[in-house]
Amino acid sequence: MKIVYRLIVVGCVSLFAITSCVKDNEFKNKETLITRNVVELINADSIKSYAQMLQDMGTRYALADNRKEVAAAILHKFQSFGFTSVMLDSFYLDTYSTWQYNVVADICGRQYPDSVVIVGGHHDSILREGNGDPFVEAPGADDNASGVAVTLEVARILKSCQYEPTHTIRFVTFAAEELGLLGSLYLSYSYSTNGLKVKFMLNNDMVGYYNSDDSASWVVNIIDYQNSIALRYKAEDIFSNYTCLETVNDNKYQTRSDSYPFYVNGYKALFFITNGDDPNYHSLNDRVEACNFRFAREVAKGNCALVLLNCFNVDN
Ligand SMILES: [Zn+2]
Image (tube, rainbow, N blue to C red; front, top):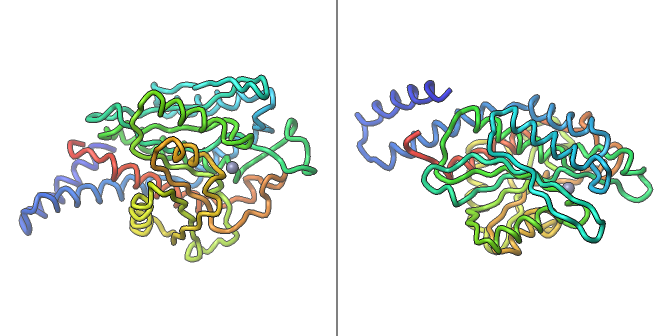
């Protein structure tokens, strides 16, 4: 993969040098070309297969006995992509007297290994009152196997390209979001008290449902925070260049997912969510069969391009 890109880029850059010698433009050209090639590798069937794996676990309710098994299955998936720096970051919930397990996987940055860009989404699921027993079954395909699946696919592609980013790219799947954003609260608080530099955090929650197959009608909502408005503008620009999605900015769910604790702890974050409500939300009908993984692929492409363009290493 890497060699092929290098050849394409070398050819392209030398041709470019004849017509223009502006170094900045050469860099931009290389950056755009590589990013475009990489994001196109993202595969909707792969995303679907990860969501199916999570749904097949029966329930991912944070208080169910299989919660460590769920986290371990995600960890093993990262390992199957070649990740060696992957761990369960556990924390104890006094209220529920349970251990909970976030999953964290890194691609180490070459120039700034101590500064991280985070891509993630929560892996637990839940059911609304009267919709069944979440200890037994809670498929949560859109909410939020889709966000985990997007995270895994971006991780798989960046790892397979053997791309060496400037900053560390950290993939995180959060535990116990449905109990009150608990996995992300724990992690962002511990990062901020330890002075970890987080360049920005991208959160994917409910990115797998769309009520139309017509890609021309697809819209992703990019939720921002007071300190991440410029990042949202950048994301809008990148989505319009590298995906087929339109974007909107509707912040009504701003406080309702894992990006919020990162903002509260002083970090820049964005939250991607399908524009429009999912009728299967927190019900037994929130299943892979009802999801649209071609839409999820576009969201993954946007995440991937945003990460690459912010960690671009000219030496690659
Ligand atoms: Zn959710």
